[in-house]
Length: 538
Image 1 (cartoon, one colour):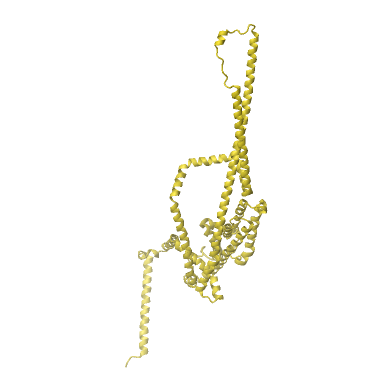
Image 2 (cartoon, rainbow, N blue to C red):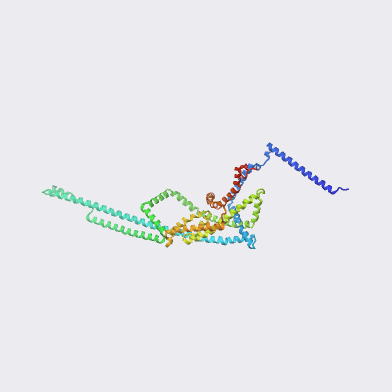
């Protein structure tokens, strides 16, 4: 009879279980033996270099540094990729909103967002840049024309002053010559009187021998009365000519100053008068002498630099065109990467979630949510507020008469991302408005000082009490001094992009300190934990 199938199956299962138990025992014995040998120190040479923990730590740090170095070397690709990730993250709520309120799928929503960005951002920005360039060129042209008028007027005043000094020196010299002539005439009259008295004292006439007297030749005078009269006429003619030239130069100086006053305005008149006073006191000549001496001392170097610059004009032109093409290519890559990043953003989120260890998943998820809330509110909020403020500042500067409003307005709005940094627009707008030739109330000094200042405080009030509470809210939880410190530190270390990321980064660090480091430090001070750092060995 054959064996019972149930018994046969049970026997096979027991045999397999025995084999598994034997394998586990063998592995356990090997592991024990291995650890014993490791403790004895005779198997450490068999380990890989990256199995040593300090070496692993160093390799991780080096790998991160190498990653940043490689990213910097291929920045023409990495920068658009990072910008695309940032835009995909920032615009994800908009994509979800469009998908929820319309029948568009994710791909269609992303295409709609790109089209809206072109219509409402790229096109207005291009128009604004065009107007800004036109206004900038016009401002530079007016400034150059006004500076030329001031220079010509100061030069005419200098020529008139030189002619006046020349005429005054001629008058002084004539007075000295006339005084010397009078003294000489008085001396000749005394000599004549002395000789006539001597002749009258001799009764018989002269004691000299007539023959001897006849032999002496009479001395001829250097200038006869006719010659002196001729010289006097010539001097008078020169004096009259110089006086006529002086009158013409003074009239030209008055005409040029009047032209500066009518064409340039009060600011340029003030600058003109200051330069004329400096010229009269010799300060301007001293400054010109310093500049001239510096030019003479560095003539060879300047000539070499000019020659080098002339030789590199073509190279500079090609370099500029290359940079322009690189910027256009980076914009194209950013839009290209953004499309694929935004359409596949849920997959990106799922991939990042898989990287989180199960042990710390809850903590990391909680911190990530708080980070997202801060970054979401600040970056999205501040960029939106900066866009609104650019319109406010541009229209405001245009209304009050500040030149180049389409350039100054967006720049001040971008600076407003950092709290109160937009206040640098006050002195700049005052100077530009002062140099602009406005008439009426706009030309008064009170208006020049008051209009930009009042407008700035109005725009800042809109930012503080309208846009920020309505769009951003108090999301960072940081005080104003902390925000200013973070902004300055970020700007010093990383420039403009440091200014942009400093505040949200500081807010994230504050969350880490409040949620992890400070509670652990407090527990360490109370003796509840032995390690000061929250990521120490357990």
